[in-house]
Image (spheres, rainbow, N blue to C red):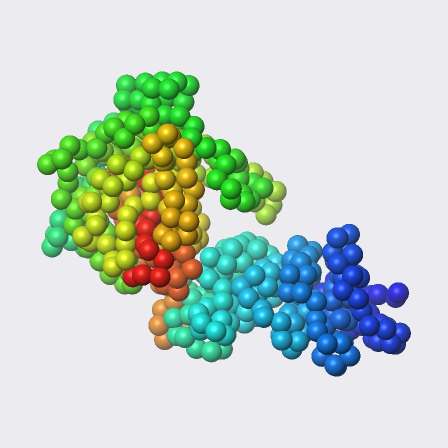
Length: 495
């Protein structure tokens, strides 16, 4: 069979399909399946296109299964065949196949990888026919921007990001890109959590800066102080049974090739990580973050003794670091991190501090904690936080991935700041500027030791695109940002 290829599409389906029609033979589903099994992308594309064309012309009663079509689209995505993927997607719709987020995502990623940002934006604008909700979430958008040639900070990728943020904000049916040269990303407006209700001060208030500088330990090397505290507070560390043990190395989730295997640690008891005794717990207040719908700060969530205890706990179990390979082939270091599963009693005590401030439908704090340390110049680039199931540690010390079996799921990020005093390091949120195409505004929440930040995540349309901005040494030498990321849990379908 004389199949031709071209640089743009990789497969000239039109020419190959004409040759198929000349033979006046129907295409078998088996031919497609065999091509998929043999990982022959070109053959699978041509065969599926021919079969769908026969359905369109009424030469056969039905198409092949949606699952088989998805496998072919996945092959197109991996091979960078965006134009064939788009053509197949159109044919699938004309044949009445029930397209969903899986198929749209595959074609969206293929378009992003080819730099076909206009087509990618059109896919991002689609809504589910039955629910009216966006078919693709902002998590897909951010991942796709990272696949655009040149990476997430390339002009075309930034134009795609701005176009999708603007389209979602305006709720317009048709989304359009602005030329990359017309883009303008405004410097973030800095917002600081107040000391207490009613005491918020402007970002440039020197008295606030001075107070913040004093909230960390006098020792400028917070990492060394935490390492020293770990040895005394948590004897045994990772090599003994006195303080922590490895509760799980597999949560059943598929992990990217560049991510290391899970190491989930549990404290020996509910009292291993010390919290303030009853009656001395902090009085937590809620303050809504201006300009960020659904986001609010929890002031006085942890005391300084408690933040020090969590920092030391992370050092006791040991930091890990994933490796990332940049587009230029160089190996880049990511943030230091570790993961813990706290006892139900500990999770309940933390939940009681914020229960009265949480939205309707919230039922608790997730027991699975992800602790991060940002060093000088470290940055967690633009992303959208994902939703998590209700983790649980049984009395026997076993990890249950989803205690509720799908009845409870997280909808809010709970980000706890364990240090401050450095420069930068804000949690920076990005959004389109209403009525001003091409402009993106930003709000940066300044870390404050002991405070927490809550904001929507998962597939909610108001889940914000955000980053952990770069950290720089402060005036008194503080250079490490420590945080805990966990979640606020909700009953599914409520709130």
